[in-house]
Image 1 (cartoon, rainbow, N blue to C red):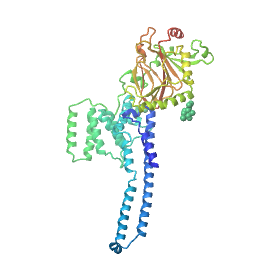
Image 2 (cartoon, rainbow, N blue to C red):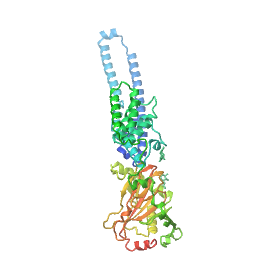
Image 3 (cartoon, helix red, strand yellow):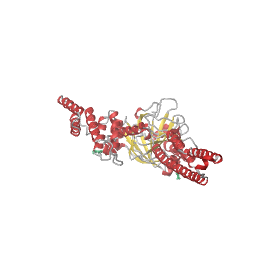
Image 4 (tube, rainbow, N blue to C red):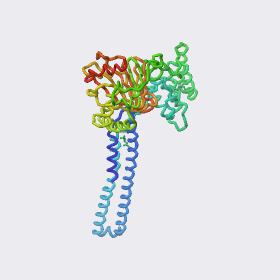
Length: 491
Ligand SMILES: *[C@@H]1O[C@H](CO)[C@@H](O)[C@H](O)[C@H]1NC(C)=O
Ligand SMILES: *[C@@H]1O[C@H](CO)[C@@H](O)[C@H](O)[C@H]1NC(C)=O
């Protein structure tokens, strides 16, 4: 019966619980929400079908009962004086009532309500969390509402809500810009009113310190609502404050100064490689220092930076292999989410260590060994990561100074990223753009085993696109005789 399918669908699809801005952190979560939406509508449709079936059954039973009454129709006069006829009538009405009670109890209404209550749909906080992430990205990349809504526009009500979230977070300039965006999109169908918007535009400007703008919008509000004494008083107050003279910053223009080098690198404003140092950097074919496996298929390498040495290897993994790795990672990524493995805000992505034995993983590992000249014997298994929109990894070091630390990192890009998602080294000013099929390699530890602090790096927030990477972390043990000779190739 349909209701059984209904139960299965609803229960299965809503087990996964997602909260807040984490909807954004992985593309797979966004995909999952699409699935949830599909299931929600499908279960609704199944519910309607089941109820329709029920209504048909009820109608046919009603018909049967009516027929019975029709054929048994004693004349009331007779029934009133005939005890047998009276008995028959009493008995029949009782049985009709029982049938009706029973059949109407088969309605799926209550069961469906239970299922809906159990459904884990986004809460209001999730919607606000998504808006909050949107604002964080905007702040990071210095984007105006019209920049970020180029692909997908928002209507006045949606923009108003984003503005309210920004306002609640005391981000008054972004709030103001969203309210302005909303004001320009007001239609007769909007729920948001012009008065609300003018009021918020004025207070955002006031809190930001732009008194002339605050006064302008307050005046417009007063023109719309001339009898509002509260607005009149606020307007006079603002005018008074303006007389006292304040800085009056320009609320319409975003400050494009970056807070730090990390941000500036992510935004592509600086890249030390454009300096004259770049000329010293080179691009060539390498055989991994004469490795026989690379003699006939040398790998194309590019020195991205000299100190610390960061090398990019091109075309080291095929599209097919990438697809294979994504395929085996995907179910494990979602599984980790079902177990509520919380992702910290410093690292918004989903990841998995691929532990199993298979030829693709073995080949990748061998390839890394050949290229770097390092032993894979103490390396970790390949670590696959998927970053969705907003997915980032704040500046960090891969290595700790402990026994058998992560001597080197081999980072494989399994996708291009349309905007954002660069790997940046803030200490030295290098930004590496993800390029599908390429990998970058660097030593985290110096020859003396100390952490090379210049290798601090970060994954910039993904603005548009879907970032997949695979990390191979190589450890010290097993490299005793290898590192010096692999380095001789460079020094
Ligand atoms: C956003 O829009 C501003 C002004 O309209 C423009 O100068 C800027 O280049 C845009 N930024 C991006 C990243 O598109
Ligand atoms: C990956 O999975 C898709 C869909 O299940 C399948 O069509 C494709 O052949 C798989 N690719 C590889 C390389 O395993």
